Length: 342
Image 1 (cartoon, rainbow, N blue to C red):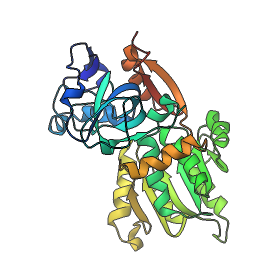
Image 2 (cartoon, one colour):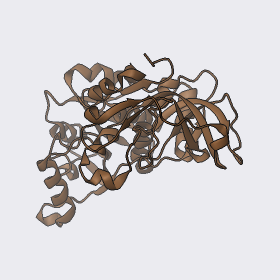
Image 3 (tube, rainbow, N blue to C red):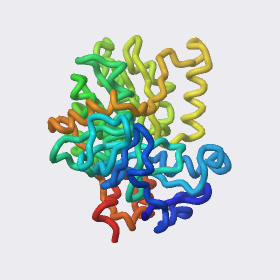
Image 4 (cartoon, one colour):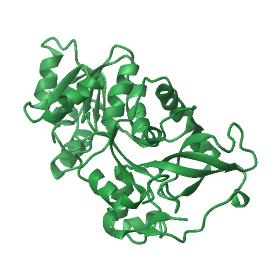
């Protein structure tokens, strides 16, 4: 079968190649509890290219050749012994372990039964493939720390995690403020954001403090930082923004020396020396059917959608990753595996 592979660490757009002789899994090769899926679409994530670019550390993480990308949608071809609730022909969304040699950028993939969820009839397979890592990250960075009526600030509202985060926070009954560039203000409002801070024109932290009011009655229960390095002092000054007991959830993006220093100082120093007095949590997607199911259900009900920045054919994977690496995506980058072979 055809599959994209990289055979060494380094920039993924330089090391990727399209292999045409990768052994194709079949029903006879399935172990108990496994599901064979014909891949329809793959949802790209920054971790796909960041891990191979870690240099020699990448060698310790996985073996080569490696098929990148973990998020996919597709059609069940066969099931192994002990798999219940799925049958050949079902549409599913699934995920592959990042440190295995397998990946979603292949014509077929073998998943554990715990790593796929059946989709309803008529589900958009492109949107489904784009809902996993970013949707799970958004859900798990928000849901545990808020209740209906709380105020949430999302730093970076227009990327994959941000677009899911706005919608999920609103579904949980929160008041949502986001930051974005001038060109994306209306876009974020259209997703449900109650307030939008244009970081091109405003000081983000000062705007949050102003929105909180002099009495501090409208301060934020949660800050979700999808950017990491803009503003560099967001974590340092976040105690001025959330209410008592508020949480700062660091999700990702790009780090700078300044932002790393502010986070380390805030976490290590006592409060009277400038240390941060609010709880710091690291937002990472824990992939399990328990968390995927509400996302799939919300999508089936029309309450949650994956915003798709762009779609690429299977022959255009390098171009797809080049787009993702610009950090200017408005939503998810999707690779169409079936129907995108040319």
